[in-house]
Image (cartoon, rainbow, N blue to C red; front, side):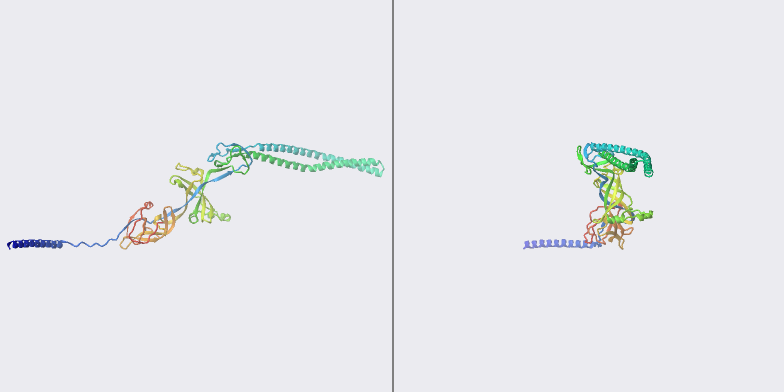
Length: 475
């Protein structure tokens, strides 16, 4: 019994201790709760998108019309012999790619046949010159003898008439004497007629001989020209493009034997969009300077301004540059709606000023042609304007915070990595140059203003937004 009481008292003590400790814990909790303060309630913040912007500034910008084309020599000669014969001599450097100075012999054709023809013509000329001289001498002699024959004929006529009158009136003489006098008169008249007729024919005979002489002289000249044509010389400082002749070959007139190029003047045929040509090409006002020119005007591009053009070899765009001159409009292609212009480069300008390769036929080049000036346009990076001609501008809201705004703009021209806006922006507008993916109008922005030169180097990756919205592809 005593043992049971002892156990019960220990249990009560433990319970009492537990109650005491529990109470102390509850009191401590209540004290701590009394000391705790409620946290401050913060309003949810709107996210900001970090972007780069440039300030829109109007400026006057000269247009550069860019096009491409192959370089070609202005003068290309397809060499053909004018006489036939065997090639007996040939230039030792008559090979493709060689440059032969003007006047040097390219090849020679055997002139033997033409030299013989010249000798034959020389003999014919000498014979006819002798014949003409003899005819003229005989003509002069016979003109002096005609008076003698006339006087002889007159005397014979008087003698015949006198004998005839004596025989008929006085019966003096005889029939035989009268007949003899008549025969003498007829002989004298016939001799006079022959000399007179010969004198009248001399001019015709001389003209006939002179015509023969002219023909013989023409044959002689033809033989001389043929001899000259047996030597084919370089008509200019000729670059050999093609050779189709060898020593001992028989050539014929008109058969091509070589192709020569004159690199003293080169041209590039550049195709331009007809809209670019119509809008930006520079023309001189010839009618204002010379009103009389209107009377001789034709329906073609006559007054194209010869501006200096920059030429760049596409295979080494940063190393090789040349300067040419806009020469003329070559053609208008109605199928492709393009205008082809010729840009000419003189030989002294064909060498690279950087000391590299010269401009040569066959190079594929980019040509930048200065055009008219765009006035009051805004210069932006090409990607700052979408294909739909839209730009994004940072505009302050009522609280002065910049927000995204989409603007429709009018693009005057896209040129290289730049675009020029003529309408839709105002001076001082902050235009976004950071590429955006799914931009949402009204989005709060954190703008960093950069210089226009730095904007041309902007190549940021597209920023992503959790908000879905309408976006534009960079132009």
